[in-house]
Image (cartoon, rainbow, N blue to C red; front, side, top):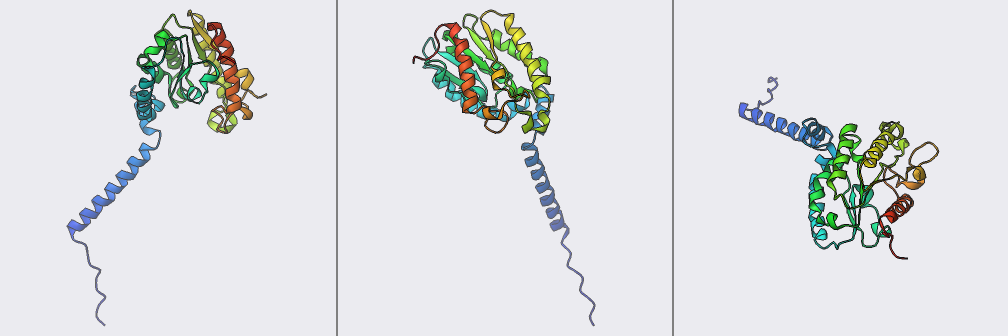
Length: 258
């Protein structure tokens, strides 16, 4: 019998090409994994470039700012301006004050809000300002920097305009194991520090409806969130609307007419 033929060997050039295709594919997979993970935002934070939420949302924020700039050019004097993260963006601000303007951007942070204050000339002619931001900083920014950014926002807004800061609202810790202890161990402490910062400043007020949103364990009650343990549903927003409406009345008739 004739000997078994040896399998044909690829030319050296072909093997080299296959090796490069393999390596290239592996690098593409690695880059895709990094792009969808927290690695790049964590590196950016370590380098002091931006925190994780800023890194992920900068293009979305830029698009929102383009829209806000067009709106702001037509905001009349005496409006109530709301600025912050998804707590604001998902809020029907006209239920709180007639002619209110909503500048909420989901995913925004204290640094993000601070950076976009100059984009809103209407702030200087507003009747009142409402700020709600900070929850997106909890996973990527040290407490002291969150408090420092809050103070900078308070000082960066027009001193003559009454400004109301909303507390970081409670979360439902049962929805995420990594949230265990966050309400008492972090959120409550930060709210106390925010309240203390505002108490030292004129025309700056603290609004905290947390007690009305909590269940017996101190978590955000399931009846008040959309199921993710974080974002308010219609019932939760109704509580926030009521608390802000009552607070804003001290600024001079900001509730909408009946």
